[in-house]
Length: 101
Image 1 (cartoon, one colour):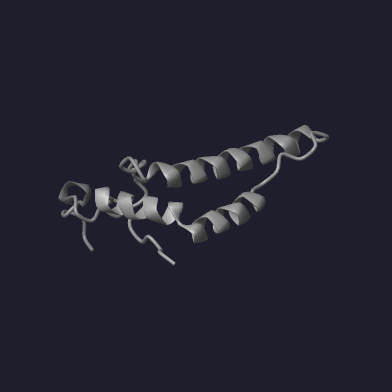
Image 2 (tube, rainbow, N blue to C red):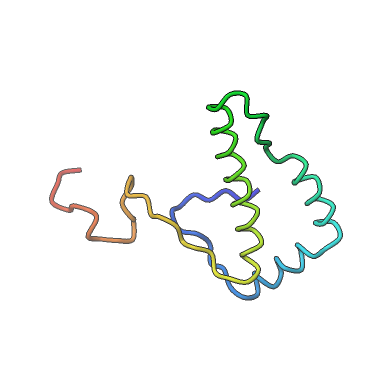
């Protein structure tokens, strides 16, 4: 399993997109996709508006994730927002060198 440990996404190029497209078109992925679709969240019956709103968000997130997977076959991934919780280690301007360590 790939675990990302930095704010920077791994490089994505046209060869990666081509290989992913081949994987998604493969027989094994088509079988896996059926299982993935079956395990997706449901919207419930609408009896409780709060539960339905939460479930709606889960369905939207799930759908967006699957859509993003397929979009990687033809476009560069969006780098996404950069968290300012921890300054970029490569950006010297983010580190105050005058304070004592």
